[in-house]
Length: 454
Ligand code: GLC
Figure 1 (cartoon, rainbow, N blue to C red):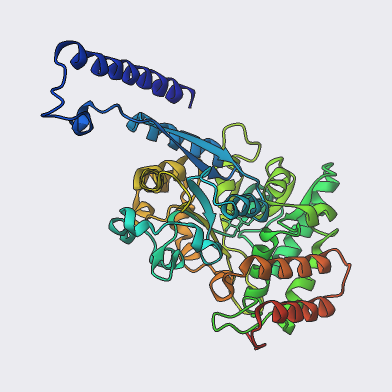
Figure 2 (cartoon, protein in one colour):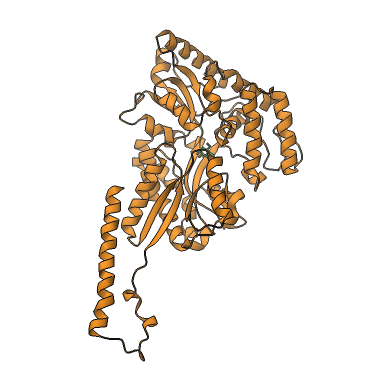
């Protein structure tokens, strides 16, 4: 990054010098004949190149920010007339959304490119340009069609897909072997049993800080993702169905969340109800957990040279519940261009560059961020760095979506009702039956939809 900045500075100094020369040159030798060639019609090549600044509002979970800055650096080398600033935003998506909304409500030109969550196109469409009008139509076909569809609101492409995400189960291969297990758990019940056995054994061996299973239990969007996985794999549906029925309150969903509540203080630390992605990864990467639920980004960090769990773990699909299958929540991020940007065309060019094959490839290899460009799943370098992109391909393409389309533009509030309700069950504040009844009522008030069965 530093090198890139220096390159950029040198380039801009050279440009400034060139501008001075062109400005002086003709004036000294060849004064323009005003009658024949007015100044305003001077050939474009002689016009000074105007330098612009583009601001990218980006995430900072794991290596995200660092990799985004590297991409910005590469763009600046190619486009010395553009200065790209990468702005760090809060980890939790609702906090990040709050920052964005403040800018949008003020119609502020301060941000040009925004990293937006897969759940936001419906809620935020009005604030972004249609990228199809800026060249995205030519490359949209390279990306997963379902994500392009998700990002298309009333015919307008609100964001170019950047990376996709799906919930995964991380497990310690060395510890499974030590305790005589030959495969990752296939069901939640198996996970519970294995986690308990390994936890008891590791503690007896002297590691008092060891836990069976860590995940995302704070009251935030990440809990909506985890809870959707418990609920959907148990046959409890997706909170609100694609047909716009409120299906949240059902026996399978209640039982699934009760199951997770029983883990707290048993195979999972009490503090898990305050955990986000990075908190879970902290415990896991210190070597203090047998299992972790997280997104793919945690893979490359676990495999880093200085990681104590390097080569001691693998990833598998999340366990199955009563529905007979596991469920991975679909996550992922897109790049959108603000309608209030002063440079929408340049910002769109930057967004398309960042989402291009080469840039997604770099992020996949360095940060295990899943590409949205389909052909990268056949790229040998990508598969060598992250073999599970190939072996778990089905998990990625069959991930279960949160009900953001069915509830737009009120997904954020829908999710808040759900994660707060689930959180109150995890902490033991409210019994599950009451919490689910309340969620159903609150969703009816919010959305005005009918209640139905999943
Ligand atoms: C990841 C996912 C995103 C999700 C978030 C929840 O960043 O990609 O879709 O909303 O986690 O914490």
